[in-house]
Image (cartoon, rainbow, N blue to C red):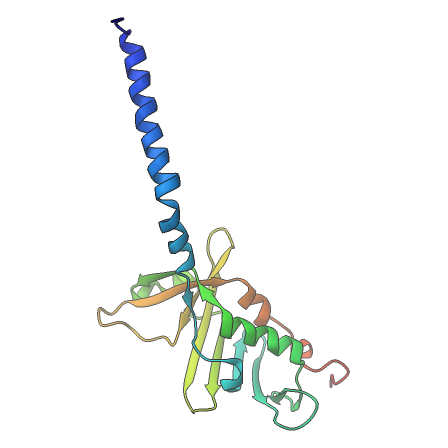
Length: 190
């Protein structure tokens, strides 16, 4: 039997080890990784039809929206001015609230809220359901690569005193950072 040089034996051993790693990581591990990707957390569990009113508070405006049960538009702006709302803009926000998912949840001490742009938040959305239940979503700043926003839902400290902060789509920022005129039904601007 031929004796192989030591470097050849080491290379064969490395090839076997890396081949085993690739097999278990890529082939055996793929289903688990897919499962993890799918475990995005639904932000809220209500349907769009369950919502009676919304209050959107940003740096520029505090807007009160109410479902319109009669008339051409689905939503009305109640304040700061009483006019029909732009249904497409409100539907965009509603879609995010109903279908939005969080990629990850962090547990932080309350004194770190400012680091995540949550004290004060850049926007707060208060949601009133038809069954009298309420929910709140506060939006903070974006993460370091601007892929997600830090957010809180129904902010309450956990038993350990920490607070859950979620990573949500930056679409929420696009949905709420608007001038009052954009929220109004086109052609109804005052």
